[in-house]
Each structure stands twice: as C-alpha cells, then as structure tokens.
Amino acid sequence: MSKLTLGPVLFNWPPEKWRDFYFRIADEAPVDVVYVGEAVCSKRAPFFDPVIPDVVERLEEAGKEVVFSTLALIMTEREMEGVRALTAPEAGLTVEANDISAAALLKGRPHVIGPFVNVYNEGTLSYLARQGAVRVCLPGELPRESIEVLAAGKTVDLEVQVFGRLPLAISARCYHARARGLTKDNCQYACGDDPDGMELETLASEAFVAVNGTQTLSFTCCNLAAEMNEMGVEYFRLSPQDTDMVAAARIFREILDGKESAEGADDRLADLVPDMPYSNGFYYGVEGTAFTDPESVSE
Amino acid sequence: MSATMELVCPAGTPASLRAAVDAGADAVYVGFRDETNARNFPGLNFSRGELADGVAYAHDRNVKVLVAINTFPKAGNPGPWMKAVDDAHEIGADAVILADIGVADYAARNHADLRRHLSVQASASNPEAIRFYAEAFGIKRVVLPRVLTVAEIAALNTQIPVETEVFVFGGLCVMAEGRCSLSSYITGISPNKEGVCSPASHVRYEEEGDVLVTKLGECTVNRFSAGEPAGYPTLCKGRFLVKGKPQYLFEEPTSLSVIHMLPELAEAGVTALKIEGRQRGRAYVAQVVAAFRKALDAVATGEPVSAEELATVTEGRRETAGVYKRDWR
Image 1 (cartoon, rainbow over the protein chains, first blue to last red):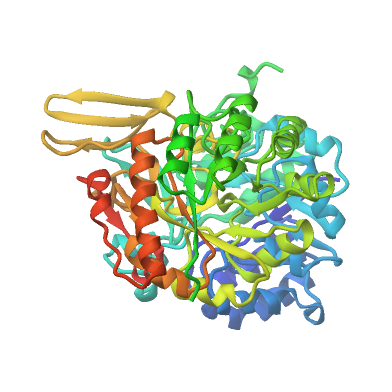
Image 2: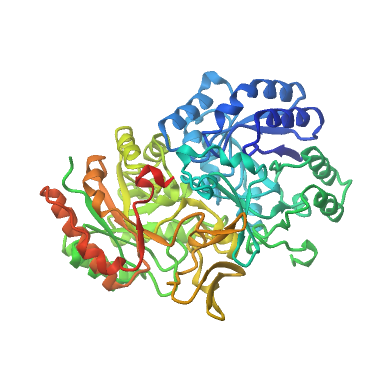
C-alpha cells in the first residue's frame, strides 16, 4: 500500500505560521507520515521548539505517524548534544537520521534514514538495514536505474521525494547572511525573508538555484507524479513549499489511488507553484534541471 | 605539540607521484583511472601497473601511497569499487581512502590488514559520525570536511579514537563534500557518482563583444569584461544575481592556503596535512610540496614559516583561510 509523507519544513517560517501549517496538515491532508524538526540550521530551532509539542499532539491525534528529523550537518558541540537528546532511547521518539551520527546513535532501534545520508547502493542500504533502519528516503540525485535495483533487493521500505524543491547542497557558510554582507554568527535570521528560498539567477537572468540559509535547493520543483507508480517504492515524500500543501497532498493521493492522471496532476500542481518550473532530470539520469515528458522516454 | 605532522600530497600521474616524493612528501594519494575516485578526469590517474611502479618508487624512499576509492558505487554495479580495493591491497598500497559505507564494509571484511582512511567525501564532521566509522569499519584516520574551525578541530580531536587529516592548500569546496549535487543538477555528472565536478566536457567560453562568458552546460557561470582574469566555471565559484545584483554568493574564485596556520593545526592535534590538486601538473606539485616541506620543517624546529615559496604558484589568485577562521561562515 503506497503511502504519502510530508518532509520537514526546510525553510525558516515564523513559528505561528509553522504551527498552523502543521495543524492544517493534521486536520486535512491525506498524508500518512509527517516529519517534524529542523534539518537545515540549528540557529532556527529555538523558535520552533516551543510549538513542537502542540504540533505533534495534533498530528498524532489525527492518526499521522510523526517522525523527528535531525540536522543534516552537525558541526558544533551544541548541535551534537541536540542530536543525542533527540535520539536518546528514553526520549522514545521515531527519528529520521539526516547524518550518519544520528544513525549510529539509533543503532539497534527502528529508525528512518533521511535523504541527506548517502545511500547510493545495495551495500550501504543493507548495512543500514542491519543497524535498524526500517525506512530509507533516498537522495534526490539517484536515477531510476538505481532506485529500481534498490527496490528489487530491499529489506527495508524506501521513500523518494516526488514534489518540492530538491536539496542540492549543505554548507558551513550561510548564504542568506552573506547576501546581506553578514556572517552566520550575526545572520539576523535573513533566511526568514524567503519562505520558499531566495532565488538566484545567472548573469544571463536565467533561473539557477534557491538558497535557504546554509542550504542550496533546486530552483525547479521536483515533480515525479507521472513516475511514482512505476518506481517499486512504498513511500512518496512531498517537501513543503509555501503553498497549499493540503491541495498538493490530495493531488498525489489521487494519483496513487488511480483517480487522477499525471497530466491532470501537472496542470493542477502548476497552480500551486506557478513560478517554479518542474524537473525530473535526476530520475532520468540527466541534468537535474530537466523536465522530461515521460511519454518520450523509451523503456 | 606534535612536531611531525605528515604531509599528504596529490598525484594525478606517475610523473607527479615521483615529483611529490622527491619534493618531500610523507605520503602521496592517487586514484585508479576510472569512476572509483573523485578526480575522474580525462588523462589522469593510474593503471594498475603504474600504481605498482609508483608504490615501489615511493616505498624505496620511505614514502607512503594512499589510494582514493572515494565515490559511491552505482546500485547494481559495486564490482569496480570492490576490485579497486582488492587491487590496492594486492599492489601494496599503504591505505585506501573510502567514502561509501558499503565499500568500507567490504574492505573491512575482506582486507582487515589494509589500513582504511575515511575520505572527506564521507562528510564525517562530528565525534559520533567519526566513532561510527572507526568502530564499524576500523577506520584509522578521517579526512575532515571543510566545515570546522581550528578550535572545533581541536575539540574534536579530544573526543575521537582516530587520526585527523585536514586540507591546507588548493581547491576549496564551499559545500560540505560528498553532499553536493550542484554539478549534476546542471550537467547530469556528479562528484559522488561519476567522480567529476563541473566537468570540462560541459565547459564553454563564449565571446560577446568585449565580454567573455563562461558556461557550464546551459548555465552562465560568469561574465568577464576585458582585462578581468577569467576563471574555470566551477559552479560554486560563479557570479550570480542576488535580488538583481551580481555577487559571488557562494565563494569568490579563490583557493585555500593556510601555510601560516601550521603551528595552530599542530596544536589542535592534527596528524596529517593534505594538499589538494591531483589534476595539477608535475611542476605545480613539486613546488607546492617543497614549500610545505620547508614550512613543516620550520614548524618542527620552532622557526617562523615563510610563504614566499608559494608566491609563484598562487600569483594572481586569491587565497582564503576558509572555514578554519570562524568569520568565513
């Protein structure tokens, strides 16, 4: 049975907006799993921490599986302590490890591996499964051939992002701060200005990438609506953008249920992210910016 | 304070290997001529026979040879990576430098006596991650990702059971290594999978009047007016429009040099210093290695370090101490 998941909000939204977003997801979105937590920058976490209990309660009351996402890049002792607390056995949480450190701390207990851990092949996948991973969200740059091989021989559930800007890179340096002539230490939380990321253009005024603090994302919106039913994986991730994600979840649910076509979905999704071109290039093993009409791809 | 940090030097060709050895390297790192290493460039790297000759040359002079097998095997085709580990062992390499968990597991189970280092591509930036690789696969040394300050490296070294190696000179990744898909986003070719970032096959230089436009694939990476020195279009060193204003948002076209910080790195407990540049020519390698040999020897005897030797190779290029200084972030 295919399941829809909602990835963690990657952007720095105001805490009230963040809380209300999840409340509405809990009440209305046909998703099975919801990831909660700060994966990008530890400086943001203190703003969300106070509202997390209410969000988790609401999601669990609505029957959602709640998974706590860890930071992708852990550099400081304080960040390390945060991950230790989240993964401690006594915390009793289901956790998505976005760094191998978190996976190591979760060894022997069921956990999820997030898309920021490099799982490219069956050797790594089976090793992590033996450590206790029960689900692995694959990195966005994996092509179809790799997904098919991993799906065929797997001992754990697999998850693939099918909607939203794709994470491309993470850095020690904060580019939102740098854009303002600041550094990460005195960033003034500049990333809060751009709820979908700050869009960069080339000097030829063409779309390039979207910057989210220390993270770089695709400018394009990943859209694998046409491909999801052929992948052989069970879990499909929608990565939150600053749009009606309840509507997005309904569209993808209808595709999984055979009630909507890929073409119909493309048209409806375009209304949700009107300024983001679609892409599926990584899936087809070409440049990630590309959007290939699945009809034109030979088997 | 350790006075004997090891100097780990790049070699993309047998000639560069000999040059590095002759110039005072303690260890030389190399890759096989295929996608199993992160400098999979045309005309670069070693055949099995060349590696055997290189190992003999280095070992005769008490220099180690480390083999980088630091890309991530394609699903369904791990064979070339396993073969690379087998052959490095057979040829008598002193260590392999690994990034993928599956490959590290294979090496640990099949060649327990082959020393294993963790590549920067594994992005192990904290004590729990490093302890995992040490305990699971017997990793003896970690090449640290370029995300930590010297103070953080010093703190880390008190918490881990393995040696650390840090980059001190050459090309500078701005993103956490092994976690960057910018190149494949624009070209379809990825450092993690194919071992190539911003591939030369996709580079174009176009003239528009007096302006030189550099492109990677369809992406304009920079525009240089007459007289402005033009650089290679590496995506993260490009100039882009930030709210309409041109800016080197990720990083300037600059390279790393911390030859002045060697005493601080020794103080931080670092075991080995790495020079980037397997794609560089023999003369460059010889010059940089010689300069660092001299600097390290000076550090060992408490003398001041001179950067003069590097002036000719860095001339015209900007340098940075990168993340080793906190305000870089």
